[in-house]
Length: 447
Image 1: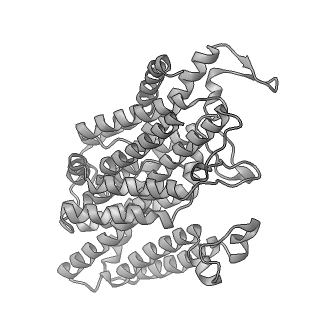
Image 2 (image 1 turned 135 degrees about the vertical axis):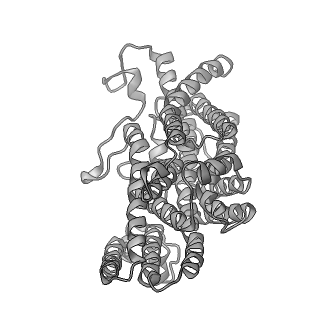
Image 3 (image 1 turned 45 degrees about the vertical axis):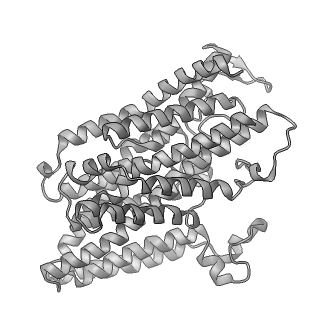
């Protein structure tokens, strides 16, 4: 039990480090454009980091918890993975490199699990209790097909989104920038497009809503059992799509009046919209990154139960990973602690990375800030819906590059960008190797 408590404490410390390491993701553009002072910006971002507790479910946490086979590992594996993730995060923070906290955690978890499999079984195959032959690399969930044609999961999908997440962010911010630029002209075409987009958004979001009958299916208790309306409105899945609609409709409303504003009025409106876009991105950051730590804590509890058969767990550690016929069960203190830790970390800032994100990639104005943060937020909501743990760092960096491309290709400082990409590529393998080495060291002292 002592080792389990140590892992939980270290996981929350990692979450705190994640907050100040990734604070720049949400506040860099509002600081660079002087919409908020640095202190105001971290308060703003931290508030919405914590508010994400009421918006997001546990889909990403489930994916992270199943990175490795919890039936085949021990607590030393998870401890090594968390320590490696903390070390890499602190190093990249010290160097001012906006690397991915998400990928270092997953890389550490997977690397320690592989080291454990090699230590126990060697490089040759072994037969389990069911007579199935496995190999050392099978301990990691590399790829799992989605149910009913849904999105597949596994480490390979997470690795693929090292490329796809920034590309999605760049594409979305580029398109939003083009949309805003055309909306500033006094022609009817952009306004027709905007109205059509508003109608399509309302229809799409309405189609995504979960009705009350679906919410209470299987005995699930809604947040407001006394009211059908509030139960539907405050269902996490529905809140997320309400936010998507609110973001798109707000930007659309601005686009409809953009051409009638003078330069001063347009800049003032864009600065106010940056508050909305940075809040939306902070929500996505909190919801995406806090869930990864929840997944690690959940995996640690399940591993403890597996390695101590017959042990009685107190209600405060009553955790269950989803199975074919069960739901993800997690005591409320775990998500509350995770969201609190990441919010506290965001309050601590991370000014070296703010400088990189806010000025070194490309010069950012309020216009670019709105486009980049809106694109980043929508990308995070989309990937969270698919239960894919992506990097908020990669997403917002791609979004900032996307708005830079609308000016000209040379507006993006590609020397800085290439250095960042190398950090992204190396994060998972370095974290995995580091975690493997730490696992072997810890194994000497912890039986």
